[in-house]
Image (cartoon, rainbow, N blue to C red; front, side):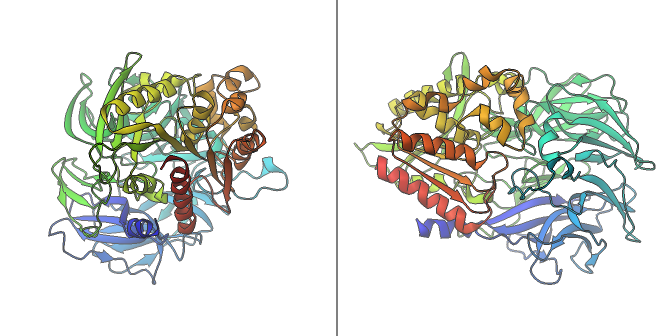
Length: 632
């Protein structure tokens, strides 16, 4: 297992992709799967994959974030810090990587730099005097009077020529995303009162006058909103609205409205996809990046009649905004840069005409996929089509049956696409590890997932673990009949909502002989009062736990704990803000009391997203060892 971890750890990852508006250069932040250092590189989009990119010479080894091109394509802005946890500052460099210059002296968290259209200013999100990064990160220690410890993320603007900085959004609003108006006089933003990690789920859309910081709420959504963007003529604002369970992992329908919040229109109410990003092409045309089934599609939407034309479709997960973006588009919308990967092809930077891009880098040419070739499968259950990915063992012998592990994605509003198993946090390395050791791995997208329209995403509201578990079990019947899988050697695992589903599954069925629950939720009633993001629960449960405790109780694994016979390993980060360690402890305590084989591992200092490579590797080793013990 150590050899596989080391090999996957060598995978070069490309993040925060940025394409110059004139398409001549592309920038990205580069790292490896086993390191935390991130360096900015710039490449001309012409030339072969063997050409050497320019590494920005910013005082030795750095950790970089969020490169952004100026509108004239001559200058790149990028946040950089001596190490991932040290103070980042905003730098600018020429397009060829020369003449780096620090233009800020910040004290606090900063991210998402964006240039004004006149190239004179750069805006970014800023939490003065405090950290940030969202609820995926490890929660800070909290003592004292808790209600006074709110540090809102505000919009700051720096003058590129003078370095003068001013914060232009109100102190009482936490800004999540934003866009400059075409005349550089107004921001459109998603925002809510603090605390920011908790209140994204009740964010509204605001316009903010840059001159006087006046903020006006123009739209209060039914569900969650993301990616507010001005039309090129400034007469419309588009945004994504849908049932979303995690900030930064977007999915929903595309809406448009006037800058005053009137004429709100759903542009795709019956479309069986989930939009995660979009780009205005003209006042009457929008380019959509969508999840479709277990993959992605790029489509052009005509706003005159809401018809869409598909330009590209693939099994990869493509998105331009939010967490871990891997797609960028030129100003004219005809040229793109992307970092596609699948279960069997490692990530590389590609550029070219939209949907016809060519490979620009080759850093992962020597990385081999020593596991089975993934395939997309579908089945129907209760009137709906369910998609999944199936990764077979690396080698399959005739007349032999193999164990299988079901890996359930988080969310629940999420989707499993085809992705190289060495992504951020090495969370998907388990797929490669199990396949190389003779397991099938099933990765379902049951109801509640993105990729089949809003009705499908909302189909598990007030029904966590109900229909989505039935979808998964129906898939088990299909694959165990079609493939050489031993139905007596099945395992189940998942992280976050997938961790909850793992805990829930072993209370509802004894079909599984081993389980590994990562960052799970054992008791929705106690969880409501323990986690730091309780606002996400209201759209899914319909009310707070204090107003309707019964709907929380009926989906709580702890209620059915005496049904469990499955040996269960439980893993969680010590400082997980989204799924507190106390939930894992509660489930482990119950299993131990009832005599069910179990083990609890709490990783020191980790949040919902594991950062330390040694902890990522140990989590993988512990998971595989548990399945080997009970399934091989």
